[in-house]
Image 1: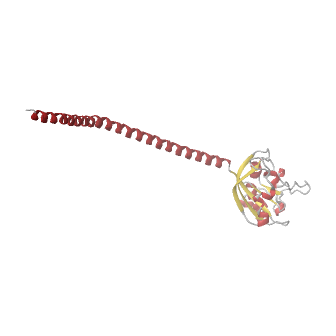
Image 2: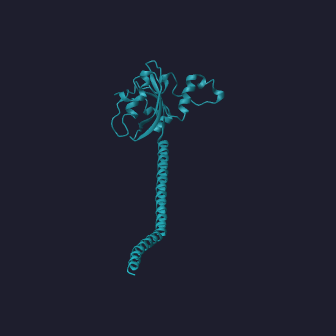
Length: 235
């Protein structure tokens, strides 16, 4: 793992990139001053932009962190981050607390591959040890000592909470719809059962009476006819 550089070798700003670390804000009329060079203008933009941004050199040491990055990570001054190993400072463990080896870190890949990478499934560690989910971008940047990487990240805690709330709402709506459908099916079954019972009560007695009368009539005929024949024979 990388370890922090000594204070004598630690960079003091983004001068390592050829940009002044003490650039001041000036008016448009003052462009002939401090912000007259593209490097100075870039330095001021990176300092003022609300997007957290930082830069690591080829070995992985932090050589620049803007105020937004410091604030998101719980640091009060960029000097507290400069010269420290980026991965071992803010990305050394996973959300479950297990170690996150630097060799497995996708954010540092642009230093070797030269490709720009992006994802939203990583977590950073604040100064106090707490963690937060991030969406991040990492792009290669050529430096005198070898290819480094420039990072931009965003805390997506609120976004994930909102997405979770939406999923829970949708799931609740689905459950409510399924419950209503189940209740409707039960009600339809109950109505059908009552209708069948009503038909049975209506049709059952008359059908039974007709059958009874038919049976009675047959018995009467079977008993009367032989009696008439016997009567005729005895005359």
